[in-house]
Length: 486
Image 1 (cartoon, one colour):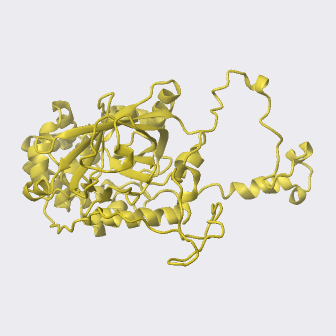
Image 2 (cartoon, one colour):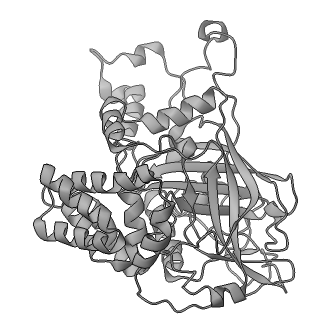
Image 3 (cartoon, helix red, strand yellow):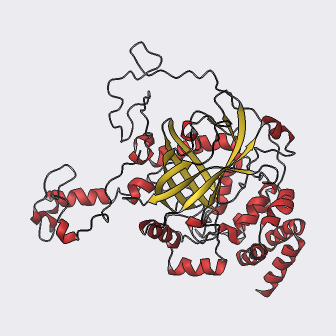
């Protein structure tokens, strides 16, 4: 778990009054003599300070996240505000007033590290709860529905939203080509091409976990929940013109806004909600509640508050505490079994594989990813950090030499099995999601789409218009009109 070093800004003394933090050394600990800090007219190959610095420089970067590459983060706490023990036995939810440390990372989906924060895109909000039973991660988006339900399509979706392999330029042809060929993504499209996709600040951004999780209480009775986080400041978005202006003037605008507000004591907070379903609710919902491209309508499944999280600490070192942060839907705790849909299963594997590539197999030994509870595994060796490498404990299971043993939970239920079909989401987009948009948000859809469609070939334009003729003929007509005006 993340430590809490003293913030350099907390001390009221000036830099001159505080003096140095200590003696400059090599990474091996040898003190650096002042003449070694000058390389002119020197035998550089024998200058150990130069060698230490120059050989480290080329190895400072690690692989970028293949999605959600541009991001920012902060730390704080989660507090339980309402009793949900009848639904979930997870200990961090066990009593009102209980607090749990959290780490949160905000990001754009398709952008690389240098992408402007306000580039139109779906945003991510990932939260890590450091609980006494291990880390619990929720990897959420600012859209209530995902783009696809079939995990086989995920690599193609990522390729479609990334740069063209020939020109290395972002290509709206590929993104709209993919989206218009998948009938399940209509909820996703409405959010992506409206102003809802671009928050005015991370502090005012919705977050939806998209999966319907299976949870259980102390008696082993299962329930099914979706996690939602709504900003206490309210939701506020940014129009495309303002986003484009800020992308040029301040590419790190959202990151700066979050950091500066926390530094100034304006701590952002989100209220946490559950939509709760029984097994009977699942059977009688009238649609597949485990379909990540579908929304759980609030009039059918109301939001129940259960807590809030507050972000009150900025990172002390961005690389150590944000770039090395690693979230996974597979980081679960007793009482939260995960989701039974195929996309959740695929994400468990994909996230773990991505972390192994980016950070190595000992990702959970990196301080910011380390759980707060005592850990005993049969995992050994590999790329650093290995820490104590489990000392001299047995490295195989089972064994007769006092190695770690699994716990017994007589009340643990099994994750249910679901069969999913390949139906679309156009009815939900038309009948439920679009009516929740304000008139201004609805007007932003044709305006933004027409802007993105300028370089798009005619047959893809035609498909976009045909889709919106079914969702809302007015929006389709406005797209046509605005394309003609260009």
